[in-house]
Image (cartoon, rainbow, N blue to C red; front, side, top):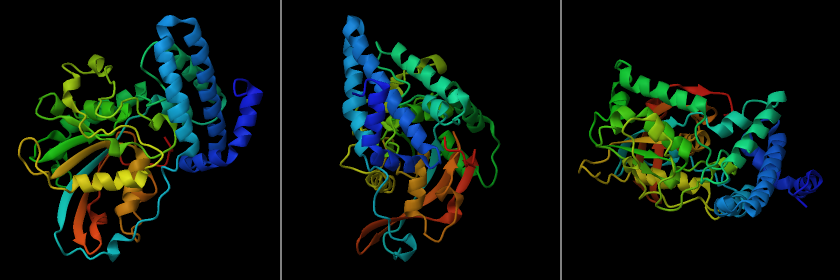
Length: 375
């Protein structure tokens, strides 16, 4: 039924309520149009995968694996997920923060533009259909590989450029009184700093390129953390990598001299998000880990965390732990591609367990700032 345009239309009408839930994540008036286009694209790719796998033995294994990924994982998750829905947290200003208080400095780095962003987030004019067709053709060309431009979408050409611009900023910008501490953290010039990234390729690629002047010295690793996986039902937020695997970012070998996969540690990657768990659980899991004060591999106590991640996850994090009275723009706007925002996360023990709070005055724009564009 879904193999034809008419069948796809019937299918879309059947699942219309679920598509409207999906539209909330997109936060723009044409979200339902995008959802329709996305589903048609995915259905078309699935059909092509089936046909291609039957006619080409070389691609059969990868094609069937991708068919399973598209339909049984990303497709089902797309329709049934409630990843962005959880009870609103209590106001951090109502908690009594006087016992066992600890702090950690956190720097959020949003990924550069992805191929998915390039296809779906640049308006709905005449070029939109051309970008979608081009994306499908590229997807078909990758059938005999474990790669994809839709699932776990990697950086686009613009995303690579943005990442290199970030790297030049980290290497060359002069210290200033307001940024001195955060720049030292980014450069690895302070003890007790750790670098972590989402288990999605675009975040790993961005933070690797952006901090390469630090990582190439070989003293640091990027810890792949599944708790940082983006909060959305979009198929580009699903990871190819299984638990304790490092996502395939081998293209960095062409970008960075001396790069090897040895600069990653997958011990914090517990695999793809599931329908049973929602984004709020991952946010609190990260907050607990960031503030736990455990010593790092070099014996230093954790004092700062550099995070490579995603716009919706970051915005949800700020909304979760900033006081409800705060009107800071980080609660309503997205961090720009490759933007860097620093803040201090506080943990305290209360009568109902550990609680976390972000001090609004501690938030600093290190690089890039915010954008109103949904990309």
